[in-house]
Length: 326
Image (cartoon, rainbow, N blue to C red; front, side, top):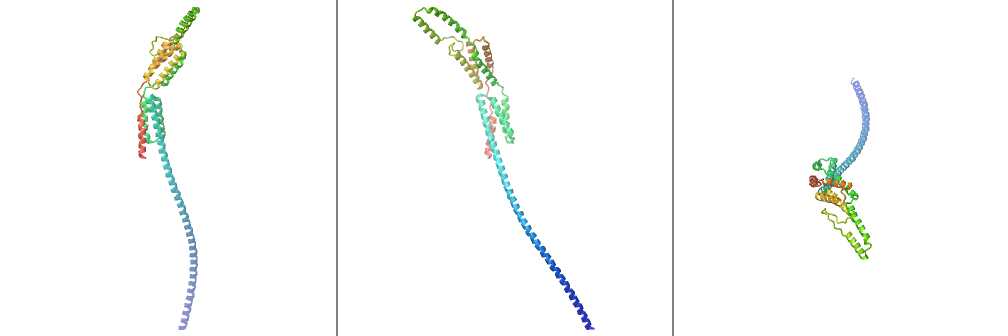
């Protein structure tokens, strides 16, 4: 019995060993298969990792390139902003220098010739230039320009072009004015002709003396005149008389443009005196010229020249502040 039991036990143990061995073999095969799968997956993972690393390197390279481009673009933007600011500053300085020059010329025109219209146009041009720039820092200058513009506009208006045109019309009419001594000069001439008829019968020396005396009388003419400043011309020299009268009128126009009240009135007074003394005042042309000269004499051309120093000082102060800030 014991032997049978041992045989049975041995058979059982052998069966268990065989079963365990079969299971271990299957397990090993399973493990080997899994290891192969894991190795395959590991290789794939390593491949993916390498691809990821390469992609990361590419991405880093691209990011670096983008950062470089971004830095370059920032530098370019900063350079452009600096250039724009420099150009704007230079443009402002150039604009202020031009406005200062225009205002200085307008100030000279006011002081030398009293040309209010030219100064007003210069101020309005400067204000228009600054208003188009639309910069807040120009507001003090624009306020000063506005004050000077209102000051010039409030001055009494003088029609200088109209008065100058009237003087030109009188100058143009001088050649058509009839002389007053034409008729007086003809009467003694006819008398002389009558006296020369019997003198033809006199001797040679008498005729020679008469001719010499005639020539001397033509060279030297003594006349009593009421005008304090008559032209030093003989009555026969009408062309010189008319040219001197034109010269007086042109001097009056020059005095008008320079606002010389005394010279203006003196030239018109002398011109009227010459017309009354040397020209036929009964003629319509003479009366028209005298009427225009009287109208011209009634105009007051003198005035206290205004100043636009407020605008000039504002521009110069603004330029000085900019120079100190730079």
